[in-house]
Length: 96
Image (cartoon, rainbow, N blue to C red; front, side, top):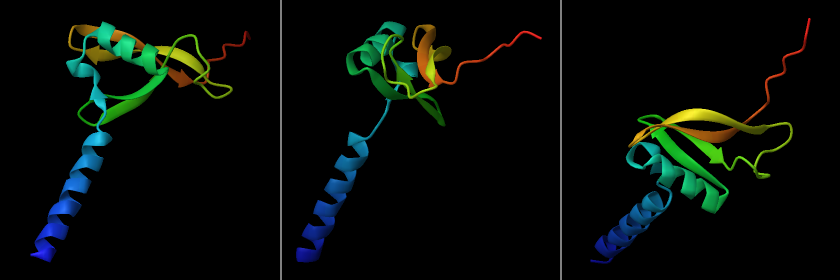
């Protein structure tokens, strides 16, 4: 009986830990919902596909480490393509 109780408790803890870290999926959110989530948290890691995820940030904030800046990329949302920002090094185009 004690082994069953310990196993049950361990399973409940593992389940709680796995659901606590589940990422929200942009494909089931509207573009406005995804943008609002990022604005309210300043940054969020979101699932963007079956095997893809990324960290998205506000356009005007300090969530990126130097020398990275917020760069707009398209992501899938429930209502079509949505432009969100992630941290990337800026492209440098030097004249010849």
